[in-house]
Length: 121
Length: 222
Image 1 (cartoon, one colour):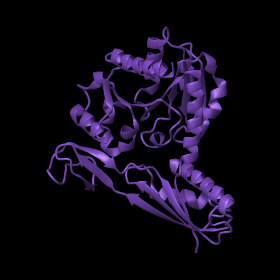
Image 2 (cartoon, chains in turn purple, red):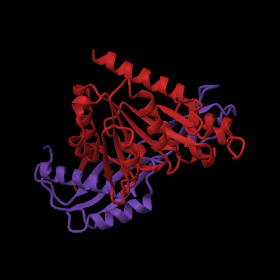
Image 3 (cartoon, chains in turn green, brown):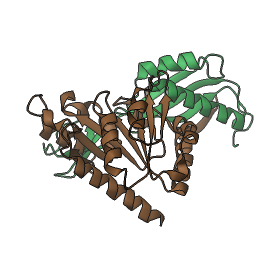
Image 4 (cartoon, chains in turn brown, green):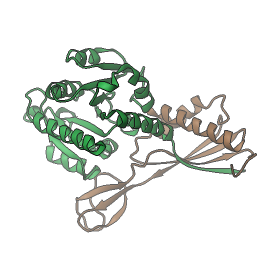
């Protein structure tokens, strides 16, 4: 259940930016994370629904972009998106592949808000 | 509708507190290890064995993370080192702030090596840095060889993987070749050490790795 910790940190970020830019409500929050980051989307949404109650982010929609698994082949050097991990290189079939993407931690990309007093703060 | 660009790690605040912990550890010259594994893989036993092996050489302290109970802290305290228990009260990991709040309970001026035993969990602890020098993980043979492919982040983040309960290899289904290959696919720089905390097999290699890391850290400060 680390999703609750993630959501609490996310709400701290929202408050920090609200103080900086002066907005009262958040309409949507765009997030991204690697598909292997261990973030369970349903748990994240549930935690957000519970923890955002009474805050300026209550009712905001969460958009989560899940970044794909990327494998690099040690045999031929090819790098590409993969459905699974571990799996063989799509280019040459070698099983000597290493993880090059998909473990990115949860990131807040941007906030869509009602109105901004200080856009460039 | 206005959009505010943020582009920040959600755990930024955790990372900042971890950075503060790290600065304190650097100032005091404390090497810090974050020990992680599934429940029952042998974290506390490894802590006990490590204390016994290094006690004459370094002053050790331990932070014990558990959801509840002081059972592990009591076990560790019997080895004559300062120990603080963190009860996460349902939380599945320890984070930088919990460690920061636990530190006043330890005589930091008299500590060379601080071992943080995390909550038994292969998922969440990997995401929360606490200001450690190394993340150390244990995979025990009865858990099965599929763990690196199921929980890659833990293997990706760790400096070393200890394969514990290696003495049980003849009795359990554990494809050690696959476990190692998949773990290295997560992290090509992962150091792998085979150990049995019960028989003592491989513990010297573990202690040697740890000693080298501690000495490298101390030389870097000198």
